[in-house]
Length: 68
Image 1: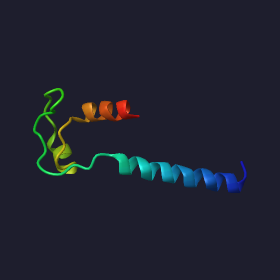
Image 2 (image 1 turned 45 degrees about the vertical axis):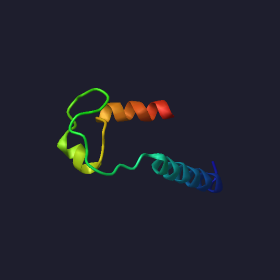
Image 3 (image 1 turned 90 degrees about the horizontal axis):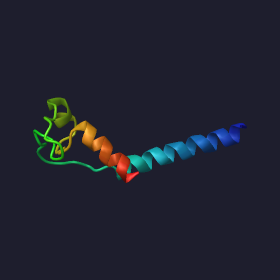
Image 4 (image 1 turned 30 degrees about the vertical axis):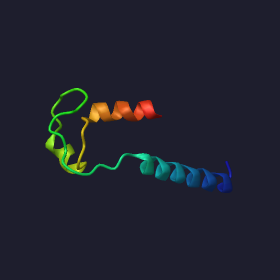
């Protein structure tokens, strides 16, 4: 791979990463104490880091995988 192709690949990766971040749900409000899907307690660190979260990490990852 020459330098030009490498730069193009880097730019594409950066663009795809930016688009993926833009597609993520932006939470607001009060976080749930328990996951609305599986009733597992949501750790305080997650509730602080993701204000308004309603899902535990496992359920959130499953939802994102299903979305593609």
